[in-house]
Image 1 (cartoon, rainbow, N blue to C red):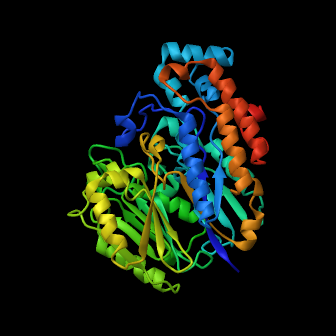
Image 2: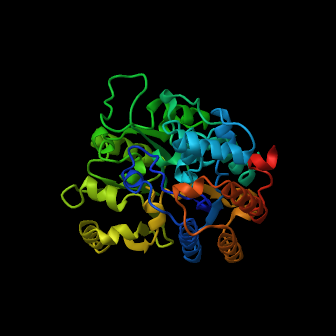
Image 3: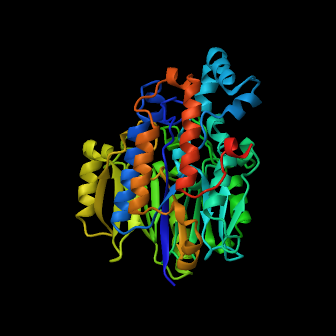
Length: 448
């Protein structure tokens, strides 16, 4: 039976703005309060989806959240009609209104952790929505994320869904941004690689001093248990605390893996050699041959990696066994990074080609190509069981492009977020989107 890695890209929401909400994310903070362009952001993301589809990769779409989140504002004490809630929040607590308008759900690498059926005890694909507990504006995402994933992967014979972990710091979970899977083939048993920033209960593990470590060891272990993963099919590794303090808020900012290959920076992990040996040993036991591609700090600094998002790239397998690296335009603009990539692809190794995409709107808010997608390994039967409305096709691309052109603004500032009309625009757009994607009622305004 054939198997595939399907990339489900997040569709950028109508309230895409630069709120500077994410402490520890250098790009997010440095572009705070600048004017954004939601229409351009959504079209850039759709262009990447279509390009991958045209190259022969399986591609899907994951819908954005309803924003502003009026219900979240009501839980914080704002009252009255929806318009009054927004106006009161804008007047009394603008940072809370900005948080309720965050479009960061576009980075669906943070949406959930996914384990394919070849790895799990019950032979189903398992999803656990990430609690994203480290940031308020992200912690309000998982209820809608769970409903959207449930509507996309609804067949209980093939798919299992778990609620987010307890919303406390000890179980901070950032989803697939700190999770990678290695395998010989997508439909075969593999090794799931969980990267954590700190331990909540074991003081032997060091922690960063400047920026928060968002993922805990205990959260990663809990997800592995929920998904029924075998001990011999799991490797845990700690992210280097010093790189977190340099702006590497997720592992996918400093490393990316696919198939049998880990592409990583020299300073990404603690106890790197021990971790690589464990990955090699465990992958070898299920027939795989682990390969690591280390980028030395002498060629690319951590600062280069953070500014260019070299590692927040998509590493994709081609039919001939080689791999393609999808990188943002910022990699070409960084002389050291681009020089390294030219040498990498010319060296005859497994990574043979680099393709560059303009994702400036996403990059300025702190997310590159890899942030925009959630990887789901599926066999033929499971792919057939996915809601077909969310699988990218040329007609769907055309429909979504036209939908964006109709509904999105081309400019968004903090003042625009205070406009009650924005909520009505967003709800109208999302109501139409759920019909295009055949999701049913997944948003609070559709359910309540």
